[in-house]
Length: 227
Image (cartoon, rainbow, N blue to C red; front, side, top):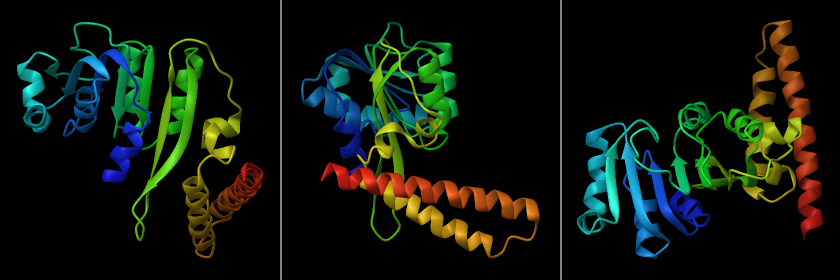
């Protein structure tokens, strides 16, 4: 948990109005407020019971009016436009739904739990600029992997199909954890191949194996070039 929070906080930057959507315990809003990185912070959750955890942590900021808790589905209940929005711990499809009902924030940081590709495609389609897009890991024996996607509403971007699938910075060799993730997935794919009982299933796994091998080779080469 600490590694995940630390990685997210490392990409938080100054804002006038900050929103942590689906804020869980409120650690990121607390980081922003404690370090003077925002004038005001909204914390939201669809569940009043879940929001209570963050309200307890942020009680003194709530008392002085710098933190406003709102029971809300996404950005729907926030009464003003926020110039920095964090959404962490939701699926990429859910983040897209939230944004499609509201707006692309001037600055954003998203940590999708799955379907990162769909989120990347939506952001590029909406002419957002993706500035950071990489994978980090947490834990050792049972490692978990998370994607971080940060950027701004304006500027536009172009992504290749492979960048949509894997993340631009990952393919450039900016993330060693991503390489580990691909190697682990290759091992699992090879294991599934030994149990494939249909030609269609075997073909799909062989294609995936080839894609993973090409990706690993590309990342290893770029990691060497960065040294």
